Image: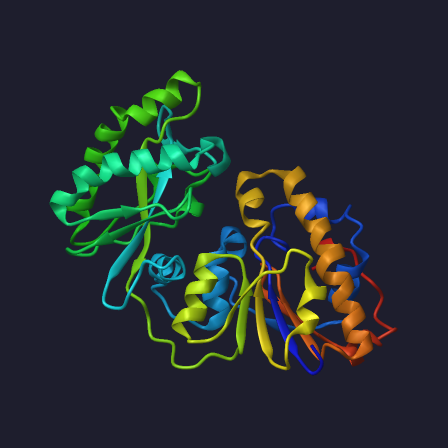
Length: 342
């Protein structure tokens, strides 16, 4: 990877959540990189969940303007979308009604399996076909809806609902009436679903409804600063396809495998922290962070020192990006800070 530049996008690492925990972590390689780096502002978003949300972080990294057509890009990566088609995420959710509001179950609490997802999508598609709609479930937790009628109003992202109250979410737009009615009809269908009845008998949470978000058509990307995208995510793959650039599967062994790549400017996207962040699963979040320390941050330092990597840019979910080259690693006068200082 000599003379290469690597931008490493890792949502959910340096956010306010787990901030106090970071003060106790021993991650000497990451601390070393951040302490010696130059810093520049990064458009992180208006709140903490934006820093952990891959969709927002990736859009900011590549300079896509709002509204972000997350679903269309991900569907393109999954081999579904084409130009001039409108796509939505249709995330399966479980609602729990409280005295004054409705909360949403965390993603892992649904424990969805491929066979039951396929069955329930077939049930719903039989109903949706009359309105020219069709569900696709390439991903277990984020399904896609292809529509041929007016676009729905913009619902908040699914990730922003976890742990929040639905009574606080505002839905606006000319077509909201149709989509609100559709949501009610889907809830009635799901309450009678054979799959949900099986889940109830097995003491598993049923799918209460679908949450529509991330809608839009494939955008135009005028220019792209990278030569390839390295990831294991359909949204990142969709960006690569749209920009007509190579897409490289994220190597299981981490950074070392990337040293075989030719000279270029690469964007690597690692989304392993997103689900444990939103689930507030500290144990799993910590496990993945330690994997990053050994499989990415340690070999990155070695490559910078050896000159096989020219520069690395870290975008880790906060309001800064960190830029490090070999010369910056020599800044011995900068003391190594703990991770809660970033």
